[in-house]
Image 1 (cartoon, rainbow, N blue to C red):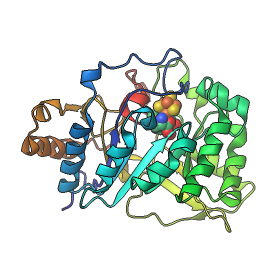
Image 2 (cartoon, rainbow, N blue to C red; image 1 turned 120 degrees about the horizontal axis):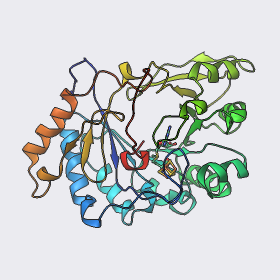
Image 3 (cartoon, rainbow, N blue to C red; image 1 turned 180 degrees about the vertical axis):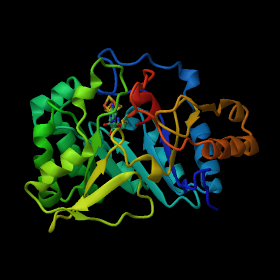
Length: 326
Ligand code: SAM
Ligand code: SF4
């Protein structure tokens, strides 16, 4: 079965957030004190998350990415991932993590059936990394990347939010990693999530990131796979990993969007930046598969054509990426 939205896009990808908690405090994602934790009973149980996943796959979702908050801080995540990977019809199970607990957990994640890991890493310099994450340890993330490969994973894809004056001097160092370590790198434009005055100063358009890499390397466009999302992908000749650019703010983003999102409190969203959301809890407590399926279909059919964050006068509401799942 295929899920198609009213703008002709095939929706085959669900980002499922399992927690709003995190063991880091990236300054672009949450305020220094963190976000007020949701009441325990408002967070969906693993049974409820599994029901959403199964229903979504029955409707045509083929790829699920587990995210958060930091998914690895939720107790019981490994057995839950095993249940997810056993869903018939699910072709791809991936997980996005900040990598802090990866060294300890990589082998368990691999045996649970996770197929790919994305690791968020915004600096290869310990001090800058600690500044961005407000105290995170670069060494633990690098050890996590190594452990993932030892466990059997392909080299994790690295998500890197590039911010002018913060880590943009490292663009070429990250590009080098596609040659030296085989990681694929996805450069993400900084998005206005936490309401910070003058957020535009951090933004570097994807086109500038590409220009800077092209000043040293030839970049060859790469064909995108079946689950490719809104990134444009390139490869440096001889590099095992690819270089992707996610231009969420400056454009070329929405027309290829193939995803829907569900937060850890059961709020389903068709667009990261939209204020529109559907509460799935009434269809989970008690469980009602038919109504849940109707609600998910409705999220797909009302998915907005595009977001408005790059438009002049855009007044964004404050939202924390850790609650929506990035
Ligand atoms: N904690 C996990 C991690 O950091 O990978 C998963 C959740 S995190 C919210 C998912 C992704 O959202 C990360 O790659 C992070 O860099 C990205 N993200 C968070 N805030 C962002 C922002 N303001 N602009 C761009 N990307 C952002
Ligand atoms: Fe935590 Fe990920 Fe947000 Fe950083 S980006 S604060 S690691 S949820």
